Amino acid sequence: FRDWFRNDLKELVLDNLTRKNLSNIPNLDVEKAMGYLDDHMKGRADRYPYIWSLLVLTQWLKSNG
Image 1: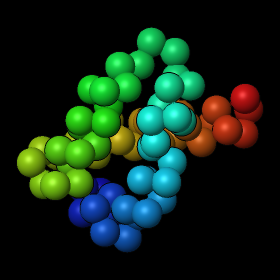
Image 2: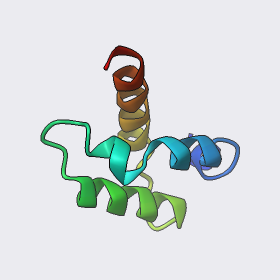
Image 3: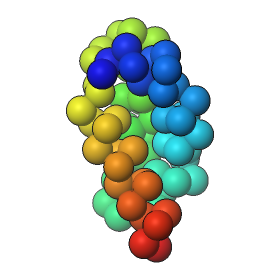
Image 4: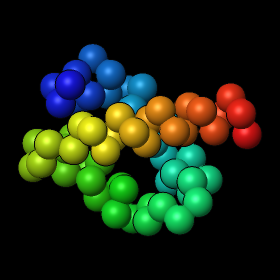
């Protein structure tokens, strides 16, 4: 998954995990989330479980918000 988010799904992830979309998630530290995303995309850390959770949640909020 880690490489999948950095390559094949990078555009999908970055289009959906924006500051605006993340700010719609109650109690989420948006700056921390953006830092995790940046760390993952630059290969400094493997954050795919966290990114996957955020991606699913933002998609759910879009369809049920």
